[in-house]
Image 1: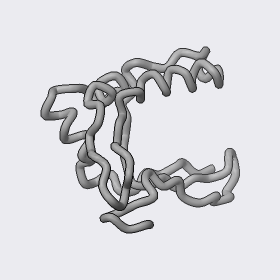
Image 2: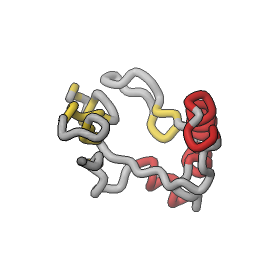
Image 3: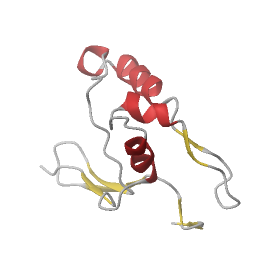
Amino acid sequence: MHKNKIKGAKTPHTLYKLAKEARYPRTAAGLSEVGIYDRATKAVPVDADVSQLLTSLETFWRDEDIDGGVYPADAIIVLGSCVRLWAHQTHVDIGLAVGHPWLNDQRR
């Protein structure tokens, strides 16, 4: 069985930098406090807004009944550019989940 691997996590993410400056933890609650961490550009026409991260994760955990429907408040959020995914309990590589479709104002 393979474990999912996070790629692109070596360089500190902008969201991490802002959270660290404000002394917020790398939890969903802490990162949600950052709010908008990057403004819209011509290439990416929306703000990067994480203000609803905690609410979204809590809703997802409850709706999917993961761990009794309660999101763990102390869970550390790990950010990367993409995650290699493997089909559950198999050796089947199902590709990459990309964190953002744009890189340096260009499509990935």
